[in-house]
Length: 238
Ligand SMILES: Nc1nc2c(c(=O)[nH]1)N[C@H]1C(S)=C(S)[C@@H](COP(=O)(O)O)O[C@H]1N2
Ligand SMILES: [Mo]
Image (cartoon, rainbow, N blue to C red):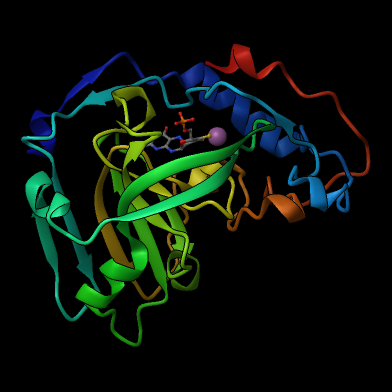
C-alpha cells in the first residue's frame, strides 16, 4: 500500500540543504538558556497564533479508508491497524504546546488520539527495546528514546481543535511529542518500530540534535554557539 500512496510535489532539495547548512552553522541558537520559563516560551522561540506547515515539499495523500498503521520490532505483540481499528481504541484528549526548531511556538493545542501509553500496554516492548523509530508515508523518519515515547503526554493524534488533522499537518494520523521540538512529531504516520540500537532519522543525520529539548535549546548536534545570530523569517521556510 505504501507504494501506491500518492505523493504531491517534489522533495525540496534546496530547502533541505539550507536547513542542513543552518544546523552546521548553529543558526537560530540564541545562547540564552534560562529565559523566563514561567511564561512557557522556551529560549529563542516566538509565539504564533496560526499553525505553520513544514515538510520536505511532499504531502502524501492518504485517505483514512486505506491508511494502515504497523507497530512492530522488539515487541511481544505487533499491531496492524486500519483507521477503523485505530478509532476503536480508547481515545485520549490532551492539550499541549508546540515548539518548532524554526523558532515558532503555539500554545494550547487540543488533540485527540490514541496515547503512547495505551500503545505500549498493547505491544509490550521487549527488555532490549530502547529506541522508537517513526516511519512516515513521505519517507521521513525520526527517532526517540523509548522513555520519551513513554511519557504520559505523547499521542498518536487524528484530531486537532475538534477537526480531523488536515493532510498538510500530517493527517490522518501524526505523532505528537509535546516536550520535544516538533521535528520529532512525525506526520503521516505509517509505522512505529521498536529497536535496540538508536537510528538517527531524517533531520538527525542532517545536523539536528538527537534529542530535541526546547528548554535546553537542543536544536543542533554541534551544540550551542556563543554568538547570537538573527533567524530567518519562518514564513519563507515553506
Ligand atoms: N512525515 C513527516 N513528518 C514531519 C516532517 C516531515 O517533513 N515529514 N517535518 C517535521 C518538522 S521539521 C516539523 S517542524 C513538523 C511540522 O509540523 P506542521 O507542518 O504540522 O507544523 O513536522 C515534523 N514531522
Ligand atoms: Mo522543523
